[in-house]
Length: 426
Image (cartoon, helix red, strand yellow):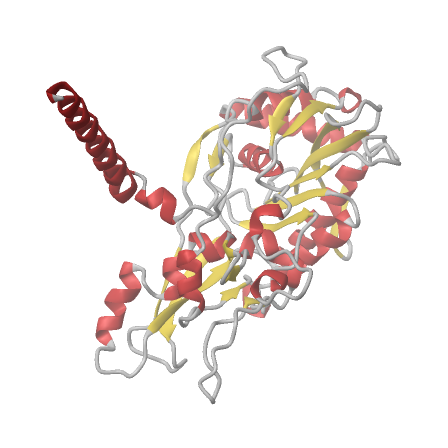
Protein backbone atom coordinates (compact mmCIF):
# COMPACT_ATOMS: atom_id res chain seq x y z
CA UNK A 1 0.00 0.00 0.00
CA UNK A 2 2.77 2.40 0.92
CA UNK A 3 4.49 1.78 -2.43
CA UNK A 4 1.32 2.61 -4.33
CA UNK A 5 0.90 5.86 -2.41
CA UNK A 6 4.50 6.83 -3.19
CA UNK A 7 4.02 6.07 -6.90
CA UNK A 8 0.77 8.08 -6.93
CA UNK A 9 2.50 11.02 -5.22
CA UNK A 10 5.36 10.93 -7.72
CA UNK A 11 2.89 10.81 -10.64
CA UNK A 12 0.95 13.76 -9.24
CA UNK A 13 4.15 15.73 -8.70
CA UNK A 14 5.28 15.09 -12.28
CA UNK A 15 1.83 16.03 -13.56
CA UNK A 16 1.84 19.30 -11.62
CA UNK A 17 5.36 20.05 -12.88
CA UNK A 18 4.32 19.48 -16.51
CA UNK A 19 1.23 21.64 -15.97
CA UNK A 20 3.34 24.42 -14.45
CA UNK A 21 5.78 24.34 -17.37
CA UNK A 22 2.93 24.41 -19.90
CA UNK A 23 1.19 27.30 -18.13
CA UNK A 24 4.46 29.23 -18.03
CA UNK A 25 4.95 28.56 -21.74
CA UNK A 26 1.42 29.68 -22.63
CA UNK A 27 1.47 32.71 -20.34
CA UNK A 28 4.91 34.08 -21.13
CA UNK A 29 7.00 32.29 -23.77
CA UNK A 30 4.32 31.70 -26.42
CA UNK A 31 1.88 34.43 -25.37
CA UNK A 32 2.83 36.92 -28.08
CA UNK A 33 2.74 34.33 -30.84
CA UNK A 34 -0.65 33.01 -29.73
CA UNK A 35 -2.02 36.53 -29.38
CA UNK A 36 -1.00 37.37 -32.94
CA UNK A 37 -1.87 34.01 -34.50
CA UNK A 38 -4.07 34.32 -37.59
CA UNK A 39 -6.66 31.93 -36.14
CA UNK A 40 -6.97 33.89 -32.87
CA UNK A 41 -10.06 36.06 -33.35
CA UNK A 42 -10.35 37.38 -29.78
CA UNK A 43 -8.33 40.55 -30.31
CA UNK A 44 -10.12 41.27 -33.57
CA UNK A 45 -13.53 40.72 -31.98
CA UNK A 46 -12.65 43.20 -29.22
CA UNK A 47 -11.39 45.75 -31.78
CA UNK A 48 -14.58 45.58 -33.86
CA UNK A 49 -16.56 47.37 -31.17
CA UNK A 50 -14.07 50.22 -30.64
CA UNK A 51 -13.18 53.34 -32.65
CA UNK A 52 -10.57 52.65 -35.31
CA UNK A 53 -8.62 54.74 -37.79
CA UNK A 54 -8.91 54.63 -41.56
CA UNK A 55 -6.53 53.04 -44.06
CA UNK A 56 -5.76 55.36 -46.97
CA UNK A 57 -3.79 55.03 -50.23
CA UNK A 58 -0.89 57.32 -51.09
CA UNK A 59 -3.14 59.34 -53.39
CA UNK A 60 -5.98 59.75 -50.91
CA UNK A 61 -8.33 56.84 -51.66
CA UNK A 62 -9.99 55.51 -48.50
CA UNK A 63 -9.36 51.76 -48.51
CA UNK A 64 -10.88 50.98 -45.09
CA UNK A 65 -13.47 53.32 -43.60
CA UNK A 66 -12.91 54.26 -39.95
CA UNK A 67 -14.99 52.50 -37.31
CA UNK A 68 -17.20 55.00 -35.53
CA UNK A 69 -20.82 55.48 -34.43
CA UNK A 70 -23.68 57.22 -36.19
CA UNK A 71 -25.88 59.93 -34.65
CA UNK A 72 -28.07 57.34 -32.95
CA UNK A 73 -25.08 55.70 -31.28
CA UNK A 74 -25.19 52.61 -33.50
CA UNK A 75 -21.76 51.17 -34.25
CA UNK A 76 -20.80 51.22 -37.93
CA UNK A 77 -18.97 48.09 -39.13
CA UNK A 78 -15.61 48.19 -40.91
CA UNK A 79 -16.12 48.78 -44.62
CA UNK A 80 -13.78 48.24 -47.59
CA UNK A 81 -14.96 50.37 -50.53
CA UNK A 82 -12.63 48.77 -53.10
CA UNK A 83 -13.40 45.15 -52.24
CA UNK A 84 -10.89 42.61 -53.59
CA UNK A 85 -8.49 45.25 -55.01
CA UNK A 86 -6.59 45.67 -51.72
CA UNK A 87 -7.80 42.60 -49.83
CA UNK A 88 -4.39 40.93 -49.50
CA UNK A 89 -2.72 44.15 -48.31
CA UNK A 90 -5.32 46.00 -46.24
CA UNK A 91 -6.75 42.72 -44.98
CA UNK A 92 -9.97 42.47 -42.99
CA UNK A 93 -11.32 42.86 -39.45
CA UNK A 94 -14.35 40.83 -38.44
CA UNK A 95 -15.98 39.33 -35.37
CA UNK A 96 -15.62 35.72 -36.48
CA UNK A 97 -12.99 36.06 -39.22
CA UNK A 98 -10.33 37.76 -37.08
CA UNK A 99 -7.84 40.11 -38.73
CA UNK A 100 -5.24 40.03 -41.48
CA UNK A 101 -3.01 42.36 -43.47
CA UNK A 102 -2.56 45.95 -42.28
CA UNK A 103 -5.55 45.46 -39.99
CA UNK A 104 -3.47 42.92 -38.10
CA UNK A 105 0.11 44.22 -38.32
CA UNK A 106 -0.86 47.83 -37.49
CA UNK A 107 -3.67 47.03 -35.04
CA UNK A 108 -2.21 49.06 -32.16
CA UNK A 109 -1.80 52.16 -34.36
CA UNK A 110 -5.30 51.88 -35.86
CA UNK A 111 -6.92 51.32 -32.48
CA UNK A 112 -4.90 54.07 -30.77
CA UNK A 113 -3.26 51.75 -28.24
CA UNK A 114 0.27 52.23 -29.61
CA UNK A 115 2.55 53.83 -27.02
CA UNK A 116 3.23 57.04 -28.89
CA UNK A 117 -0.49 57.58 -29.60
CA UNK A 118 -1.34 56.88 -25.97
CA UNK A 119 1.26 59.45 -24.90
CA UNK A 120 -0.27 62.02 -27.27
CA UNK A 121 -3.65 61.29 -25.71
CA UNK A 122 -2.33 62.62 -22.41
CA UNK A 123 -2.19 66.07 -24.04
CA UNK A 124 -5.95 65.77 -24.56
CA UNK A 125 -6.53 64.67 -20.98
CA UNK A 126 -9.53 66.93 -20.51
CA UNK A 127 -10.98 66.40 -23.99
CA UNK A 128 -14.07 64.23 -24.29
CA UNK A 129 -12.61 61.99 -27.00
CA UNK A 130 -10.04 59.26 -27.57
CA UNK A 131 -7.37 58.93 -30.22
CA UNK A 132 -6.83 56.60 -33.15
CA UNK A 133 -4.31 56.38 -35.98
CA UNK A 134 -5.02 56.70 -39.69
CA UNK A 135 -2.57 54.51 -41.65
CA UNK A 136 -1.45 56.02 -44.97
CA UNK A 137 -0.01 53.48 -47.40
CA UNK A 138 2.66 53.78 -50.07
CA UNK A 139 0.33 52.12 -52.62
CA UNK A 140 -0.97 54.35 -55.39
CA UNK A 141 -4.57 53.71 -56.38
CA UNK A 142 -4.05 54.48 -60.06
CA UNK A 143 -1.05 52.15 -60.39
CA UNK A 144 -2.90 49.43 -58.45
CA UNK A 145 -5.82 49.66 -60.88
CA UNK A 146 -3.41 49.43 -63.82
CA UNK A 147 -1.72 46.35 -62.34
CA UNK A 148 -5.06 44.59 -61.94
CA UNK A 149 -6.22 45.51 -65.42
CA UNK A 150 -2.92 44.46 -67.03
CA UNK A 151 -2.91 41.03 -65.37
CA UNK A 152 -6.55 40.58 -66.33
CA UNK A 153 -8.18 37.22 -65.63
CA UNK A 154 -4.89 35.38 -65.22
CA UNK A 155 -3.74 34.08 -61.83
CA UNK A 156 -0.48 35.57 -60.61
CA UNK A 157 0.90 38.82 -59.22
CA UNK A 158 2.19 42.27 -60.14
CA UNK A 159 4.55 44.14 -57.80
CA UNK A 160 5.75 47.72 -58.39
CA UNK A 161 8.40 49.15 -56.07
CA UNK A 162 10.43 52.32 -55.60
CA UNK A 163 14.07 51.11 -55.61
CA UNK A 164 15.41 54.04 -53.57
CA UNK A 165 13.10 53.60 -50.56
CA UNK A 166 11.57 50.11 -50.81
CA UNK A 167 8.09 51.69 -50.90
CA UNK A 168 5.60 49.49 -52.74
CA UNK A 169 3.66 51.49 -55.33
CA UNK A 170 1.35 48.62 -56.27
CA UNK A 171 0.93 44.99 -55.21
CA UNK A 172 -1.85 42.97 -56.82
CA UNK A 173 -2.48 39.25 -56.36
CA UNK A 174 -5.03 37.17 -58.21
CA UNK A 175 -7.17 35.35 -57.17
CA UNK A 176 -8.31 37.71 -54.47
CA UNK A 177 -11.39 37.83 -52.20
CA UNK A 178 -13.98 40.29 -50.95
CA UNK A 179 -13.25 41.38 -47.35
CA UNK A 180 -16.82 42.69 -47.02
CA UNK A 181 -18.03 39.08 -47.05
CA UNK A 182 -15.95 38.44 -43.92
CA UNK A 183 -16.98 41.61 -42.10
CA UNK A 184 -20.72 41.41 -42.90
CA UNK A 185 -21.22 37.80 -44.02
CA UNK A 186 -24.23 36.84 -46.07
CA UNK A 187 -25.71 33.32 -46.36
CA UNK A 188 -23.21 31.11 -48.14
CA UNK A 189 -20.21 33.41 -47.58
CA UNK A 190 -16.94 32.12 -46.12
CA UNK A 191 -16.90 33.27 -42.49
CA UNK A 192 -13.21 32.76 -41.70
CA UNK A 193 -9.91 33.42 -43.39
CA UNK A 194 -8.86 29.74 -43.30
CA UNK A 195 -9.86 29.00 -46.91
CA UNK A 196 -8.96 32.32 -48.50
CA UNK A 197 -6.41 32.36 -51.36
CA UNK A 198 -2.83 33.18 -50.43
CA UNK A 199 -1.39 36.48 -51.58
CA UNK A 200 0.52 35.39 -54.69
CA UNK A 201 2.69 38.51 -54.45
CA UNK A 202 4.45 37.63 -51.20
CA UNK A 203 3.08 34.42 -49.67
CA UNK A 204 3.76 31.83 -52.38
CA UNK A 205 7.09 30.59 -53.76
CA UNK A 206 7.45 29.59 -57.42
CA UNK A 207 10.10 27.46 -59.13
CA UNK A 208 11.61 29.80 -61.74
CA UNK A 209 14.03 29.29 -64.62
CA UNK A 210 15.61 31.83 -66.98
CA UNK A 211 14.75 32.52 -70.61
CA UNK A 212 18.00 31.91 -72.47
CA UNK A 213 16.65 33.55 -75.62
CA UNK A 214 17.07 36.95 -73.95
CA UNK A 215 20.87 36.67 -73.42
CA UNK A 216 22.15 35.54 -70.02
CA UNK A 217 20.46 38.33 -68.05
CA UNK A 218 17.71 36.11 -66.63
CA UNK A 219 20.05 33.38 -65.38
CA UNK A 220 22.42 35.95 -63.87
CA UNK A 221 19.54 37.75 -62.20
CA UNK A 222 18.14 34.55 -60.65
CA UNK A 223 21.59 33.56 -59.45
CA UNK A 224 21.88 36.86 -57.61
CA UNK A 225 18.33 36.74 -56.25
CA UNK A 226 18.88 33.28 -54.74
CA UNK A 227 21.59 34.73 -52.46
CA UNK A 228 18.84 36.31 -50.34
CA UNK A 229 16.15 33.58 -50.34
CA UNK A 230 14.61 34.36 -46.95
CA UNK A 231 11.75 36.71 -46.09
CA UNK A 232 12.04 40.30 -47.27
CA UNK A 233 10.86 41.79 -43.96
CA UNK A 234 7.78 43.43 -45.45
CA UNK A 235 5.48 45.05 -42.86
CA UNK A 236 2.68 42.55 -43.50
CA UNK A 237 1.93 39.30 -41.66
CA UNK A 238 2.20 35.85 -43.16
CA UNK A 239 5.34 36.16 -45.29
CA UNK A 240 7.03 32.72 -45.42
CA UNK A 241 10.71 32.20 -44.78
CA UNK A 242 13.06 30.42 -47.18
CA UNK A 243 11.27 28.02 -49.51
CA UNK A 244 11.55 24.33 -48.77
CA UNK A 245 12.94 22.09 -51.56
CA UNK A 246 10.29 19.95 -53.20
CA UNK A 247 9.70 17.80 -56.25
CA UNK A 248 9.97 20.66 -58.74
CA UNK A 249 13.69 20.14 -59.22
CA UNK A 250 14.81 22.79 -56.77
CA UNK A 251 18.40 22.15 -55.82
CA UNK A 252 21.90 23.54 -55.78
CA UNK A 253 22.75 23.00 -59.43
CA UNK A 254 23.30 25.95 -61.75
CA UNK A 255 20.36 24.93 -63.94
CA UNK A 256 18.01 24.09 -61.05
CA UNK A 257 14.88 26.24 -60.65
CA UNK A 258 15.12 29.04 -58.09
CA UNK A 259 12.19 29.26 -55.69
CA UNK A 260 11.16 32.87 -55.03
CA UNK A 261 8.05 34.95 -54.44
CA UNK A 262 7.15 37.80 -56.83
CA UNK A 263 8.02 40.25 -54.04
CA UNK A 264 11.49 38.72 -53.74
CA UNK A 265 11.87 39.14 -57.49
CA UNK A 266 10.88 42.81 -57.25
CA UNK A 267 13.21 43.50 -54.33
CA UNK A 268 16.14 41.81 -56.10
CA UNK A 269 15.43 43.83 -59.27
CA UNK A 270 15.19 47.05 -57.26
CA UNK A 271 18.61 46.36 -55.70
CA UNK A 272 20.18 46.54 -59.17
CA UNK A 273 19.08 50.19 -59.31
CA UNK A 274 20.69 50.92 -55.93
CA UNK A 275 24.16 49.55 -56.75
CA UNK A 276 23.29 46.12 -55.36
CA UNK A 277 21.90 47.25 -51.98
CA UNK A 278 18.54 45.80 -51.03
CA UNK A 279 15.96 48.07 -49.36
CA UNK A 280 13.39 46.54 -47.04
CA UNK A 281 9.95 46.65 -48.76
CA UNK A 282 7.08 48.38 -46.99
CA UNK A 283 3.46 49.28 -47.67
CA UNK A 284 2.98 51.86 -44.89
CA UNK A 285 4.15 55.42 -45.48
CA UNK A 286 3.02 57.08 -42.25
CA UNK A 287 0.56 56.97 -39.34
CA UNK A 288 -1.51 60.08 -38.60
CA UNK A 289 -2.69 60.34 -35.00
CA UNK A 290 -6.03 62.14 -34.55
CA UNK A 291 -8.96 62.59 -32.22
CA UNK A 292 -11.89 60.22 -32.66
CA UNK A 293 -14.12 63.30 -32.87
CA UNK A 294 -12.24 64.35 -36.00
CA UNK A 295 -11.51 67.82 -34.61
CA UNK A 296 -8.02 69.39 -34.91
CA UNK A 297 -5.84 69.02 -31.84
CA UNK A 298 -2.48 70.42 -30.82
CA UNK A 299 -1.27 66.88 -30.27
CA UNK A 300 -2.18 65.63 -33.76
CA UNK A 301 1.00 64.26 -35.31
CA UNK A 302 2.30 62.11 -38.15
CA UNK A 303 5.11 59.59 -38.01
CA UNK A 304 6.67 58.48 -41.29
CA UNK A 305 8.30 55.10 -41.83
CA UNK A 306 11.99 55.51 -42.59
CA UNK A 307 13.64 53.53 -45.43
CA UNK A 308 15.83 50.68 -44.16
CA UNK A 309 18.43 48.68 -46.04
CA UNK A 310 18.49 44.90 -45.70
CA UNK A 311 21.92 43.88 -46.94
CA UNK A 312 23.60 43.55 -50.29
CA UNK A 313 22.38 41.33 -53.13
CA UNK A 314 24.86 42.27 -55.88
CA UNK A 315 28.26 43.92 -55.80
CA UNK A 316 28.34 47.45 -57.19
CA UNK A 317 30.16 46.29 -60.32
CA UNK A 318 27.90 43.24 -60.63
CA UNK A 319 24.76 45.39 -60.45
CA UNK A 320 26.08 47.76 -63.13
CA UNK A 321 27.04 44.91 -65.46
CA UNK A 322 23.71 43.13 -65.00
CA UNK A 323 21.78 46.36 -65.66
CA UNK A 324 23.65 46.74 -68.96
CA UNK A 325 22.81 43.17 -70.00
CA UNK A 326 19.16 43.61 -68.97
CA UNK A 327 19.03 46.81 -71.05
CA UNK A 328 20.38 44.89 -74.05
CA UNK A 329 17.74 42.20 -73.47
CA UNK A 330 14.99 44.86 -73.56
CA UNK A 331 16.39 46.26 -76.80
CA UNK A 332 16.47 42.75 -78.27
CA UNK A 333 12.82 42.28 -77.31
CA UNK A 334 11.94 45.76 -78.66
CA UNK A 335 10.56 46.90 -75.30
CA UNK A 336 10.54 50.61 -74.47
CA UNK A 337 8.21 52.80 -72.45
CA UNK A 338 6.21 55.92 -73.31
CA UNK A 339 4.89 57.16 -69.93
CA UNK A 340 4.18 60.67 -71.21
CA UNK A 341 3.52 62.03 -74.69
CA UNK A 342 6.70 62.28 -76.75
CA UNK A 343 8.97 60.79 -74.09
CA UNK A 344 10.24 57.31 -74.99
CA UNK A 345 12.34 55.71 -72.26
CA UNK A 346 14.58 52.62 -72.47
CA UNK A 347 13.91 49.74 -70.10
CA UNK A 348 15.91 46.84 -68.69
CA UNK A 349 14.39 43.35 -68.40
CA UNK A 350 15.04 39.82 -67.30
CA UNK A 351 12.51 37.08 -67.91
CA UNK A 352 11.89 33.36 -67.75
CA UNK A 353 9.44 30.57 -67.17
CA UNK A 354 7.91 28.52 -64.41
CA UNK A 355 6.52 25.03 -64.73
CA UNK A 356 3.35 23.76 -63.11
CA UNK A 357 4.42 21.29 -60.38
CA UNK A 358 0.84 19.98 -60.15
CA UNK A 359 0.51 19.21 -63.85
CA UNK A 360 2.32 16.76 -66.13
CA UNK A 361 1.58 18.82 -69.24
CA UNK A 362 4.08 21.10 -70.94
CA UNK A 363 2.15 24.26 -70.09
CA UNK A 364 4.29 26.92 -68.49
CA UNK A 365 3.85 30.20 -66.69
CA UNK A 366 6.16 33.14 -67.06
CA UNK A 367 7.89 35.75 -64.93
CA UNK A 368 9.60 39.03 -65.72
CA UNK A 369 11.29 41.90 -63.95
CA UNK A 370 11.64 45.35 -65.48
CA UNK A 371 13.62 48.45 -64.49
CA UNK A 372 12.96 51.91 -65.94
CA UNK A 373 14.40 54.20 -67.08
CA UNK A 374 17.32 51.92 -67.92
CA UNK A 375 20.03 54.56 -67.39
CA UNK A 376 18.84 55.52 -63.87
CA UNK A 377 15.93 53.31 -62.73
CA UNK A 378 13.29 54.86 -60.48
CA UNK A 379 10.74 52.04 -60.85
CA UNK A 380 11.13 48.26 -60.54
CA UNK A 381 8.36 45.85 -61.53
CA UNK A 382 7.99 42.11 -61.08
CA UNK A 383 5.26 40.08 -62.81
CA UNK A 384 4.43 36.40 -62.44
CA UNK A 385 1.73 34.57 -64.39
CA UNK A 386 0.80 31.07 -63.30
CA UNK A 387 0.45 28.28 -65.90
CA UNK A 388 -2.84 28.35 -67.75
CA UNK A 389 -4.81 25.21 -68.55
CA UNK A 390 -5.42 26.24 -72.16
CA UNK A 391 -2.60 28.64 -73.00
CA UNK A 392 1.18 28.44 -72.90
CA UNK A 393 1.78 31.68 -70.99
CA UNK A 394 5.55 31.39 -71.35
CA UNK A 395 5.44 31.48 -75.16
CA UNK A 396 7.11 34.54 -76.66
CA UNK A 397 5.06 37.37 -78.15
CA UNK A 398 6.72 39.80 -80.50
CA UNK A 399 10.18 39.29 -79.00
CA UNK A 400 9.02 39.65 -75.40
CA UNK A 401 6.61 37.67 -73.26
CA UNK A 402 3.21 38.46 -71.84
CA UNK A 403 4.84 39.02 -68.45
CA UNK A 404 7.27 41.64 -69.82
CA UNK A 405 4.42 43.45 -71.55
CA UNK A 406 2.38 43.56 -68.34
CA UNK A 407 5.46 44.85 -66.49
CA UNK A 408 5.93 47.57 -69.11
CA UNK A 409 2.30 48.70 -68.73
CA UNK A 410 2.59 48.96 -64.94
CA UNK A 411 5.94 50.78 -65.20
CA UNK A 412 4.54 53.34 -67.63
CA UNK A 413 1.76 54.25 -65.19
CA UNK A 414 4.20 54.57 -62.30
CA UNK A 415 6.58 56.72 -64.35
CA UNK A 416 3.70 58.92 -65.52
CA UNK A 417 2.85 59.51 -61.85
CA UNK A 418 6.44 60.54 -61.14
CA UNK A 419 6.25 63.05 -63.99
CA UNK A 420 3.41 64.90 -62.21
CA UNK A 421 4.74 67.67 -59.91
CA UNK A 422 4.39 66.87 -56.23
CA UNK A 423 2.11 69.88 -55.66
CA UNK A 424 -0.30 68.73 -58.38
CA UNK A 425 -0.77 65.20 -57.05
CA UNK A 426 -3.94 64.27 -55.12
